[in-house]
Amino acid sequence: MDLRNLLFTLALVCANDSFSASDDLLQWPQISKCRSPELETFSCYWTDGNFYNLTAPGTIQLLYMKRNDEDWKECPDYITAGENSCYFNTSYTSIWIPYCVKLANKDEVFDEKCFSVDEIVLPDPPVHLNWTLLNTSQTGIHGDIQVRWDPPPTADVQKGWITLEYELQYKEVNETKWKEACSVHNTFVPL
Image (tube, rainbow, N blue to C red):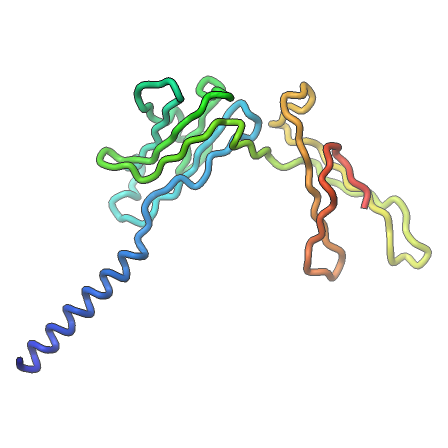
């Protein structure tokens, strides 16, 4: 074998190795999460992956099916929850009925997840977070603080439809690690 053929063969081997290595880096589109802030609506989100032919808008569809449905239906609203998402308003949300969602194009299914809405509740964060200095030590180094907040507007806590448990994290001045106060159901914590 002459030098030219040897170099050509080595170049092909190296090229094939680099192609197989890059195949490992290819990512399929996948459902990243489904979330309901208040048990009445929910949204599902996905990543496009990095296949060049799947990144155009409308290439990937989110299809859903409730437990007793016979056919898959397309996402009712691709706009409200933002890019790469599907929003299910109250007309499309049934709390105690299991759903399956799948991410697909016309030729193949990339990812599928099944859940019921009560399993994916993740409330919005509280609002109007504020703190009050109640008193200080004689040296002025230590103090008692009370932290207050309001429930998120999307959580219907007044009617008792949902009960929230809050976890407060805080760190002291010049500290790098966060501390966690005990979980509470009320909207204030003394520290």
